[in-house]
Image 1: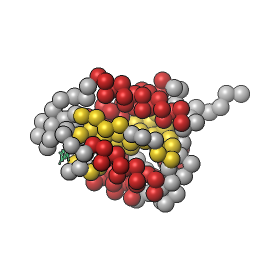
Image 2: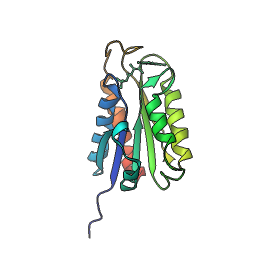
Image 3: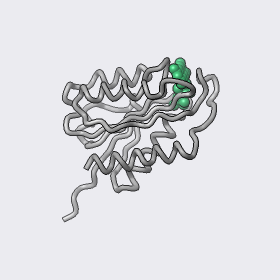
Length: 157
Ligand SMILES: Cc1cc2nc3c(=O)[nH]c(=O)nc-3n(C[C@H](O)[C@H](O)[C@H](O)COP(=O)(O)O)c2cc1C
């Protein structure tokens, strides 16, 4: 009668909290489209659980113009076909430069694991070297992140 609810994993790394806040916004977007969203830190994800999800959103702060090492390590450690048949997207806060470069790097790693990858969202938040938390994402960027969740829900069906 009614199909099982689709499931998405929103996985992220954070130091000062901006990527965690973004993960919650992406999850709200997914849930608003009736997709069950599980939000986890990358360090909490067991690769074997990926088979539970048909969608995955990966978030990382921009660090030295790249994704955080722990995020790259997680993606590189996945089987070559771990994301086959899944729809994916990416998000990254940056404080001044190269947020989009971070998205491109994550996208490449997701594609190598056979995911279909939608365009992600880079947004300005935080302080250059995270000595303090720095400015929050703007309301407009929070909306963009929620929209990203909605887009993933739509394309991931
Ligand atoms: C070691 C380090 C390197 C960073 N490198 C960059 C960078 O290359 N470009 C940039 O715009 N921001 C850079 N930042 C700032 C973070 O991307 C920004 O503060 C982000 O919001 C942090 O996310 P988080 O709160 O989830 O940890 C860097 C921060 C740290 C700690």
